[in-house]
Length: 215
Ligand SMILES: *[C@@H]1O[C@H](CO)[C@@H](O)[C@H](O)[C@H]1NC(C)=O
Ligand SMILES: *[C@@H]1O[C@H](CO)[C@@H](O)[C@H](O)[C@H]1NC(C)=O
Ligand SMILES: *[C@@H]1O[C@H](CO)[C@@H](O)[C@H](O)[C@H]1NC(C)=O
Ligand SMILES: *[C@@H]1O[C@H](CO)[C@@H](O)[C@H](O)[C@H]1NC(C)=O
Image (cartoon, rainbow, N blue to C red; front, top):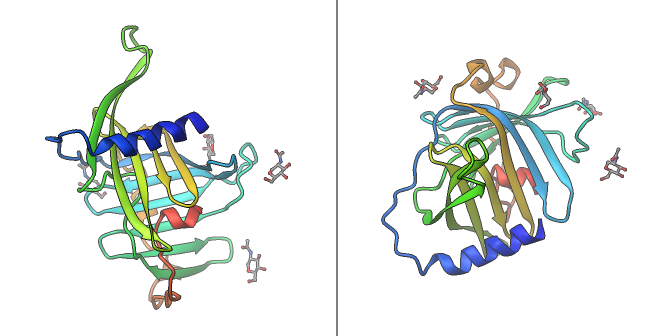
């Protein structure tokens, strides 16, 4: 893990020296699993996601099974276009609706990301043993007055593999078992018990984002 951090820091430092003719690709609709790990070694969350790349909607629900010892239990429904999201508690049928101050998330490369390199994971010369990935980097809107960095790695078909956010806390998201479709569109619909809610006030100095939910 620490090696990965060092790599990303290097990546961030060298990124500006590369000329760039690439445009960030756009991920397709996807369903799969996502894990979020804090670099100090804490598993923050693991669960299933559903992503609508055109409508810019994302659902993430923690997997309640005990095989992952995650510290957070989350159910998030994000509407990046509208700039709002819901924190859902299905058991209690309650909901909070909040404004998004930052729309960065691990399923889409930001349009202003810089292409870094194409790299191989595993051994590309053995069939089935290699994964070719494109690495992208960029800076994030600051939290607490400092700029952060992200590094996103995607397959040639633009499926995200992992994304690392380096701020005062570092969080890494990994995606697993991705399928190129939305399997259950109802997951991207606001539950009836969440409808008609007012947007909660964002406290001064708070930046709401998908990432911040895992900090
Ligand atoms: C992605 O999903 C949305 C919502 O279900 C759908 O409207 C859209 O056509 C899908 N896009 C593709 C490329 O399948
Ligand atoms: C929890 O994760 C396991 C392993 O990936 C998966 O088989 C199961 O379907 C998941 N359950 C939910 C509710 O997502
Ligand atoms: C789960 O995590 C908590 C705190 O991170 C730790 O105290 C506990 O021992 C862990 N349990 C297992 C089964 O790993
Ligand atoms: C439901 O709400 C009650 C009161 O707010 C709370 O104590 C309880 O933990 C909640 N249950 C769940 C599953 O979140």
